[in-house]
Length: 464
Image 1 (cartoon, one colour):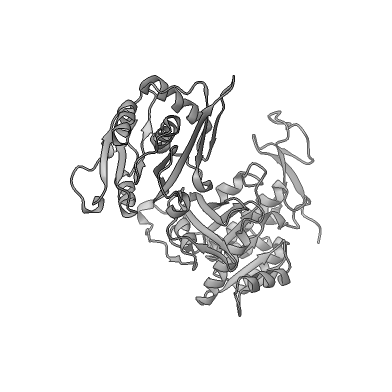
Image 2 (cartoon, rainbow, N blue to C red; image 1 turned 120 degrees about the vertical axis):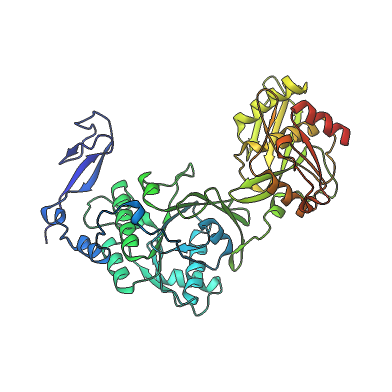
């Protein structure tokens, strides 16, 4: 059987070439030609082997008006990992394609092996395709995790055509491809892991998932910058993109949803790495809070929001005498925003830090991107500068504007309820987030609404 012909298509303008060129003949851009399979007459007619198989699984339904299409709720299958289900939006969805990325050794394979084992024990057919390990290595990991007697089907293969043939024969409800960068297709001459191979293999697996109703989980490598390796089109193909985060020297791991067509984005799941694998953490606020017996200067508890989950995180600040060029360093918060907040603190509250080194840290390695952390960061900096600790059981949240105003944070009531549930006694919040009436959920929590930065600083000094 002759090998299929390949061509090179420009990602920018779509111009084609029979051979690779450094410069596109159409638009003149450099390094934009990507290898693709040239469509033959048989392929154009839908009679090639893969195309015929997909067409048989999911015949075209034709054109219909939107009002004539019945909208049904998607059924979700729990994975046995509550924190993973939270990030997925409730569980696995039939025909969904999930892309899971993370640093090497972070626990991707461990978590997915635990999940497919739980699904298999719930009488669902599963398939674990490993391209980086042998079947014996997967069995050894299962033994370490205590998954005795597991009936998960394992396939050690990297050729796309053989993987698709196995999927057609086994008809699993959930399939894991570990990892997509190791899979290659005979239709392309480039090496596994190249842009063309990753895109082509992911496209075929996505098409199979939609046609057969099999939920497919793709494990992806990440670059040195922490981004998913391969073409960005890979993230557009799939339904859900998850990032596995955490320090390999710490026992805690975070899974963050960046994209989810079946649930909320920016949702997070928290896990603890144990000898028996990853275990969900039901109360993640305990991880990100300090263990101080008494309040210490430079510490303020923030009520942040990760997806739909309110969490309490300790913000620590250290202000020290600086040299000729004072340093501004933040871990877990945006560095540029820290410089802006220090300018607001000086201009509108009269607190100068121009000759001081300022270090800010979010405890537990969590990354906070929402502006509602502004007020807590400023209070921690002021506390460290004055050497005075904030009151015991004190929490704060709110966005600080350049004019010195304190803007409301989204879903403020839920943040306050979480603080009250965990036993905090004082809350400094934007005036727009203050409750309009007495609510039993806020019992034991004294709420102080503020509208300006100087008002917040004065109020905190009065509470000392």
